[in-house]
Length: 227
Image (cartoon, rainbow, N blue to C red; front, side, top):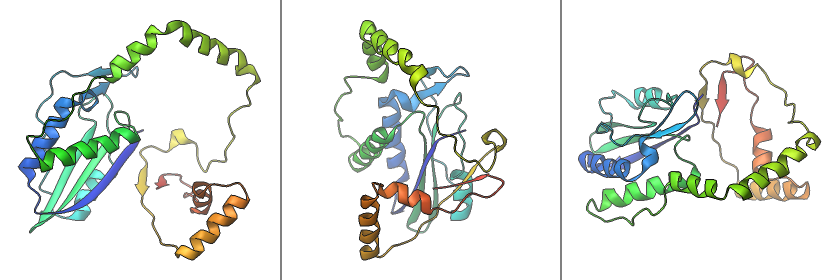
């Protein structure tokens, strides 16, 4: 199952070759944009990859979204991201898919920041990367005694830890097959939202917890996840 980060953007007068060039520079710059994972879960950085081509030719926004929004990437196949477009006149809908296997939340912010900078100034020199994820892993491995001490600490406490929460499930997750995500959105009046936040704080709850409780339950088949 893929943890898929997907967003769409409306862009006027998009220079597609310019965006293509910016994206190619990012792929060359960041190892994890060239990463794949074998069947045992080990990451492998590809030194060379084919030129990534931004997808075009979708007949409509609905066709673009159907192609992109429910994407499940195969971890062993490059790339673990995708960029597609549909254009009508001067207006382009840009759809960007990222697999969270290669990018966490902070990395996604950096991806968009650098893509924007390279699109605006194609010849800009970005600051060099002094540390890769592999370098970080090697540094952690070098401090093996500290790492082993931490592992022993938690191993000794495992028998005393409570079991994981037994959450009620509409269906066995193994039976779900390929999930489809739906986006539900709505608006709350500012004064009503402040009242909700105040009541939540009195009960020691976060805003996220309140909203999650307010979401409608998934269908009995359990095949739709709502975000």
